[in-house]
Length: 404
Image (cartoon, rainbow, N blue to C red; front, side):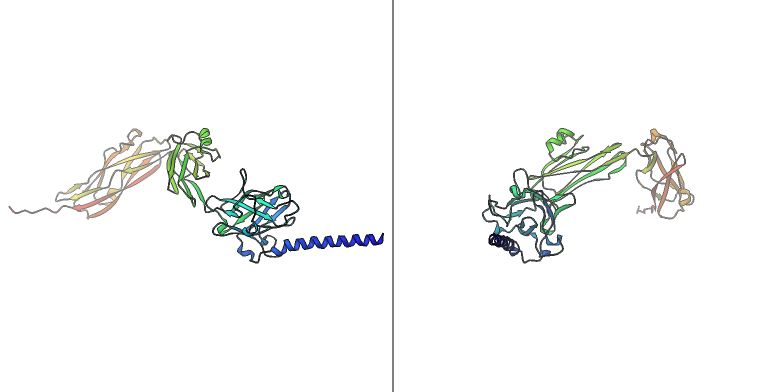
């Protein structure tokens, strides 16, 4: 019996040595020689079957250098690490014989998609170790520098998530998408009527772009047909605007909003890529107020006559927020030019006269100095005073002498 126990202990020891040697040969031996600073992917992925997968040794702070890198041509290389199954390779020379060619891992910075394969190097015993990075209804992709989506590692590894709550795989430099998308509304708030510029920008992709705008649509989907069914046909100017097959990477449209709150929306389509953006526009009723406007500046020519009269300008009232009170007009012409008198065709404008306005002119003595003067025309209503500057050009007419 003692002899049998000794034999069993020896067998157990040999099994332990075999397992240790296996992990050493297929684990530590394949460790990449490059420093982790040369790898532009970092962070963690998660598998419900095998747990955490580290994409860069900087995640752990200690131990050997390793990581996964994306080259300028999109080719992935390097190693990720799982405490359960060991090294996962992305090197093309270790992906020979994959289930479906091409046997490599690629990142397309124009489409944001990751395709191809990775492989767990501890494969064996009926387990092939293959990890598919994309399929008919799943795949890994990049949103700018944040990698997301799912890879499939068969029954042993199962689904691998590249992003989640408080974890994810992140890229830098060549591991980031080239696509830049932005949607803005300016101004996004103000008084009615609010003239707003909606601008969508999509750069970094390949091919022409379709821009579909809605003046007010809270639907979050990226399918134009589905959003059209919910928010209306953007080809109708009352609903939005649509531009198909254009080369511009920035498209702007103008829309004037009445009082209320709105959610302008855009969908951009470029190849198989669809992106959407929404903004908030808030339009309020302006408080009652008014401003003055002038049709033009005026001038006066001094002659031998004692006084001279200027050309005329029209002063109008621009009501805001339902303003309708009478406006009394005056000017500071007498304080700017000694002896000058400012005249109005109608010194008080009622609401019905705001748009037609009142004529304004100045009469000055011939002794006035030549040059330009700034005359302030003021309008007073209910304690509020608004003004507009009218430039008066004073010049002289020199008599012409002709031979008889």
